[in-house]
Amino acid sequence: MHQLWLPFPDPSCRSLGFLHPGEYFGEYSCLLGQERSATVVAHTYSELYSLSRADLEVVLQQYPELAEQFESMGEQQE
Image (cartoon, rainbow, N blue to C red; front, top):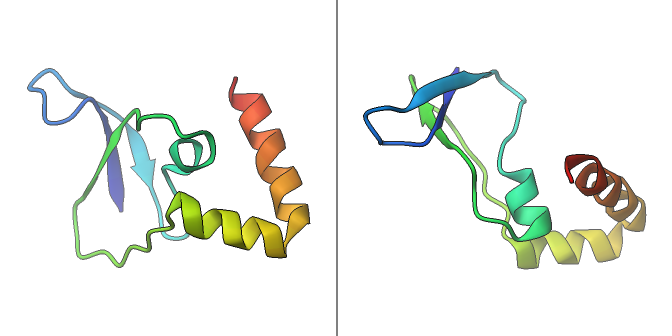
């Protein structure tokens, strides 16, 4: 389980919630090129995967239907 904090490590940080196995974070930063808005802190051993913007662009070229889904996610965020 991972806890979301905003901001971190500021002493006045507050918990935003928890992430559970299979959940993800950082998608808007990667998709929209924005700075991250929170920090995730692992409470136990975790195996994480990272996807750079450049790698994401390669995937989106190969799977255009994903690009459409991600674009709609970005529009919902705005």
